[in-house]
Length: 112
Image 1 (cartoon, one colour):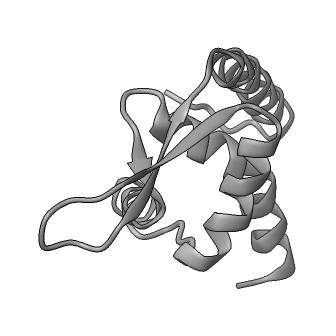
Image 2 (image 1 turned 180 degrees about the vertical axis):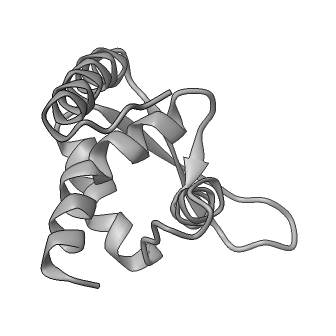
Image 3 (image 1 turned 30 degrees about the vertical axis):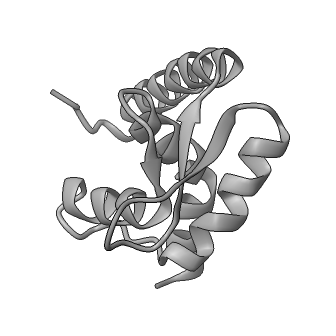
């Protein structure tokens, strides 16, 4: 991965994670697999790199984590959006949309 790719990934990680938690609580491994699957493999986050981000989001009050134990499975921490997380997600989506539109205007790339 190039340095530029790393910076894009780092800058978009919070938006990706918050977006995936919008509809339902998820654990880190699920978030990692969904990012890879929905991006067609173009974006990959190793689950160990997601946990520090999830902890930071939890410290900021944007997500809430709870431990869940299921029979025959190991204990997992499921994260869900808080009301503050929903507000930040809306704001980040608007910023991302504005950014992509501006990039399109400058580069001549038309996004359908």
